[in-house]
Image 1 (spheres, rainbow, N blue to C red):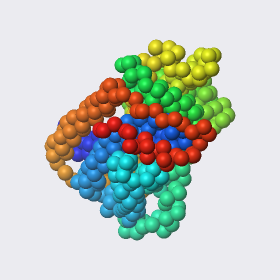
Image 2 (cartoon, rainbow, N blue to C red; image 1 turned 30 degrees about the vertical axis):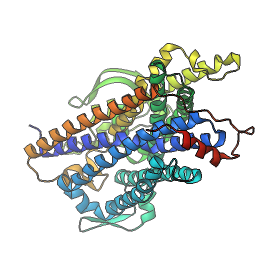
Image 3 (tube, one colour; image 1 turned 120 degrees about the vertical axis):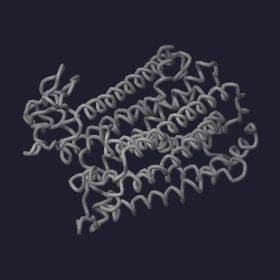
Length: 478
């Protein structure tokens, strides 16, 4: 039977894997809602308000799931990992408090106006509330990423009697990996939501829902995805170079590289073997890892054998898990790039009749491919998260405390029983969540389009608030 440490790690991994699914949606969906709202304000076209009204329900559902699942993580700091807060609580505590304050003062206060204020508050106030919720969600993410990044690249503290004390909060907040990790996470959220919107809209379109709002959502999702994915690849490369500098053992595991040296090949496929400390069945491209990581074929890339102590203690992460999770993330990202660019290029090429992005001319295989890719952001985010967090092992706070130092002295059977309980509840909640999203998509298919307003001749913001109020007045009852 597995010991308490392994079971506690699996339990926390299960909690964070379930929790991260929902912030990954709400972070960017808040900004997409603002985009829909501003497009409605500027054009008066009710297809944007229809998009807003559909996705704000999914935002509310995701927000609620994120809050509830986040609470259980806080419990685990006390029940499973008391050593964490005892050692670094002086730093982790304030950062978590900032995140909670941001969530309550911005997200929790103004989300009510977003959901129920269509016809109860002025249009400008409703738009402002949408902005503040999106901003608050992003700020919550900022503080969580600050803490997580600090655990990877800790700075601005000193240890006194085994307890970390802050000496420079600016150094703590703007630790070396924070900007890269924050950018990577925000872009991942944007891509997740872009494919979710395109995928759900494609699902509605295939079911026969040919309303203009559905077409616009497919176009919007694909356009944002096509723009964000190359930016994400660039940000990921910068993040990797930062990791190479501060956590070389993680990069060595990601690359499946055992020996330090120049002219390191890029391993495309392998079965890492920690017993023989080599790769089985390896397929690699010569020199490419050195070129990517050092921009020179002669560049030296760290190997895993450098992270074994003289007494045989292994000080690098589990190789196979990091190696494969990294490839799942990259492979999913490449699929997102190809699908979004191919779809967009095809739509542009077919726009010969003057109608740009005519969805009806999107080949059916591409349209069908968008449906399962609605969840591709989740796959890539989870794989990236596993690469990052498993790659930090055996450290909980890099160079400060190991994971083993923080675990509670709780009997393994007790941890196992709660783990099974969590897994059962999470499976049921995830099934229900996906079911509700699909139900809303099917229900929207049967809804009639909103009464169309006559846009102003300028198409600008003239009488935007008036149009918005009119739109609110004729929205169908929920």
